[in-house]
Image (cartoon, rainbow, N blue to C red; front, side):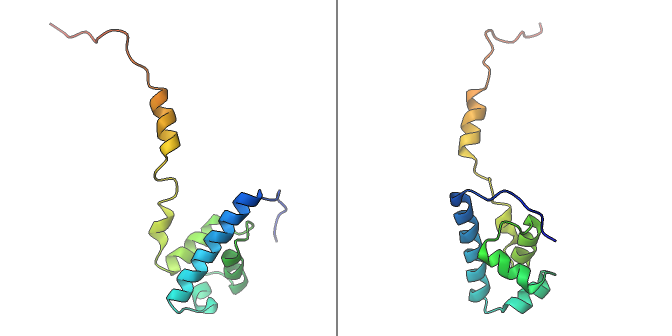
Length: 105
């Protein structure tokens, strides 16, 4: 049973649709049908079809299981790997000591 959630902003929905399309293309390149991938991912075929359509109601865990069934699970670890903005914000907040540390002796 699905729970109701607020709709995604159009750019985010487009991003999910592109992700689903990429997953579908990966499946087709491997010449695997939806039934086989769904079985390997321990999902129902309709859930796999929802993933490939970019449905925001599908859990992240289901996406990971499909990626694993396609041998692409390592791609999930690349999410937010190169966080340039976060690094810049972190660097901007670095504090510089006003005087040098004391050395014993």
